[in-house]
Image (tube, rainbow, N blue to C red; front, side):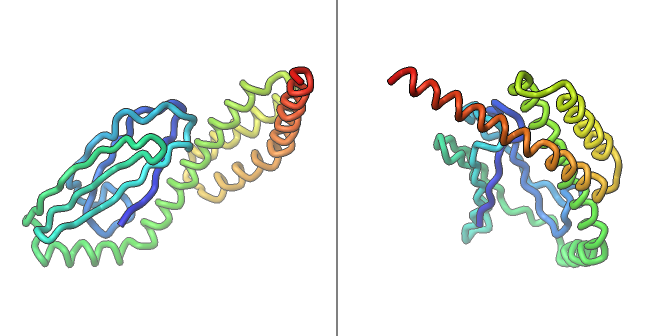
Length: 197
């Protein structure tokens, strides 16, 4: 079984992988089994590294968790030996808790995912402003900053729908600006080609 992850910060070289056991959506409601750090990820823009996390359980009940950054081949693993501290009764309680709190956990996870996406978009907007400042009018810069501030304010709250609306508003405003920046970059590259030929 495997899942794919990536980095959240430009140039990130390390990623901490924590392994939990349980039925709940949020880590704080589960039991921590171990953690390790995938070191030496080549510095790349956030979201570009492809980190595959694999969970392999052998016949002795030993769980091997392996992290591999696919572009560079950087790899790290941990073995988690079986812990017999959880009784059947405790396991049944964990399962019942997951059923009882399913709706609440789903809502909290939805809020956290919206916040994560919002934070990523705020960072992207700041990077876009820094890289393409010269292509934008003062009004566009002010508006983009205003949309980003509205999104930041929404992220600090607990209303997932408000965060998603702020994300949508920022994306709707910034998409034409991004297309203009891309057209400019392509035109510059084509002009450079003509000069060099």
